Length: 280
Ligand SMILES: C[S@@+](CC[C@H](N)C(=O)[O-])C[C@H]1O[C@@H](n2cnc3c(N)ncnc32)[C@H](O)[C@@H]1O
Image 1 (tube, rainbow, N blue to C red):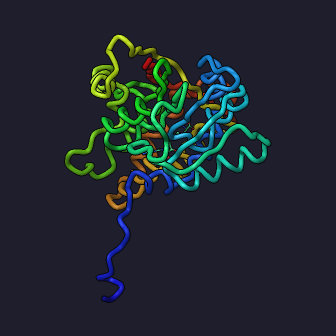
Image 2: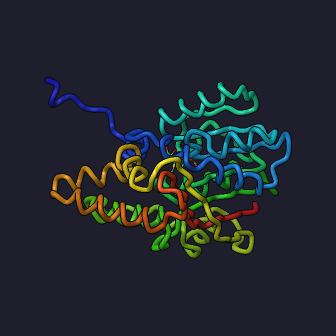
């Protein structure tokens, strides 16, 4: 068997997408909102918390600072390493972060956590019904799940970045379910009800995350272009079709329009998301 006919290990496109860039370069602009969101979750010392799709720990570290025993799980090896570096630098001993997949939390026992948090994390995993079932399985009876999910067609930043990016990217394979359906109340309810939750135990609230950056909106577009997997893929596809300049212009218009900072060397962009709370 020569090299070209040798069987290659299967690539998990979900993992590849998030390992492709360096989400830490975006996450750095989301720290303040992460801290603020965590402060609203009723975390008390000793609480067992799972942060799923934790990235480099924007919400997981604040959970640990409040005294919770935190387990972070993320599919991207580079982001797990980045989270562990931040944990070590801060000297936190009540948090561990490891690789894992939201569609199959093997190794985590049923009912392990008082609170399961997934902020713009599990929404990006395929097989949403498996994800809902795993979220419910690892939560203890009487515990809570809190998800933060972007909302399809919302006019604010992230929904629009994903919408614009997908318009330049080749269509996904047949049967692919958009992650944005995690921002639709009827889809969310269907998924958790199938996982055994009564519909009245699922609540929805619109909330805001603000991206704060010490550089201009146009420079912020460069960060997304160079480090955010979905936007990187869109630019690669757009370049092949000689459409990269159009994509660049659409994103620059969006970031400039949404920017609320009066300082030309700073960016502050609020983005609306759906906060979902599930009581088991
Ligand atoms: C937009 S980032 C958000 C990261 C973090 N929660 C935050 O607020 O900064 C999406 C994260 O979800 C992770 N992710 C995507 N699919 C996943 C899956 N199937 N299982 C676990 N993590 C996943 C990515 O690796 C990435 O870290």
